[in-house]
Amino acid sequence: MKTFTADDGENLSVKITGNGSPIVMLHGWTSNHAGWGPLPQALTLNHRVFCPDARGHGSQVLSTTREPDVTRLARDVLNLLDDYGLEKAAMVGHSMGALTLWQFIRDFGCERLSHLCIIDQSPKLVTDVSWQNGIYGNFDEARSQHMLEELDSNFVETVLKLIAYGLNTKARESYDRDSSGWKLARKNLLPLDPQPLISIWKSLVAADYRDVLSLINVPTLLVWGKESNFYTEATAQYLLTHIKLATLSSYESADHCPQLKDPLRFSSELLKFFECLTVPV
Image 1 (cartoon, rainbow, N blue to C red):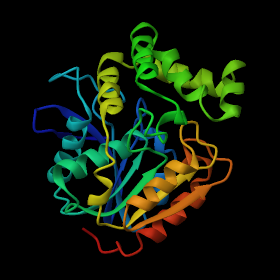
Image 2: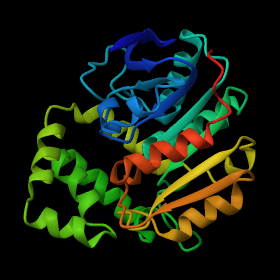
Image 3: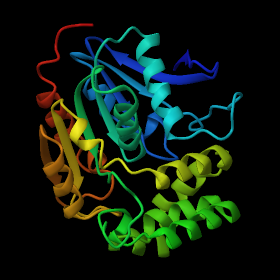
């Protein structure tokens, strides 16, 4: 692991592997660089892969603020690009990482992006009478507020229930019997400082990036789990319709993490999608 310094003085961690054209991979909420599993190594033959820990995630202890938001996360990505002299990079965002990329595009445009990969995410999490493509297709303001209250009282179990009690029946069943996977997830969540993560979550549920989609002018790969815990195929189709240069790849029997359900397929598709990025930077 290496570190870079953000423009507010915070030291942030990033794992860097490989050589060649840069790929920046942004993980989901409450995860960290290790959440990508074997994927970074599979991409390193012709690429230099940057896997940062988002502010407030991993083992980092924050010193400048304990209440970051998605705008700050997007600026951290800009700081990463600047610190390592990356004029352009291919960007991969899973879940919160995708929201961070949309915030990045809103604030800084697409000039620093060569390609984009969005994994299983909606541009607006909270639903209403005119928007059913957020979390579960049924996560309105009242439900969102209730979850925020639950995060304050029992952070770890609320995060797990957000994943378990969604659209994926197998996830609910395995959570109810407290399978080994959920025990491991619980163990990984326990050491985290809830305050920065709750602050980030508040900014995520307040965000609406539907207007950003039309600003995306780089080739975009949409990767979707057909048994996503959170989103239906309608959400994927919405993105496909509203992003000009988008391509959709759906994964059968995959949940919110299709890249981990079939990492060989994902890495192969991503390399093919980025195949023009083979000149070392």
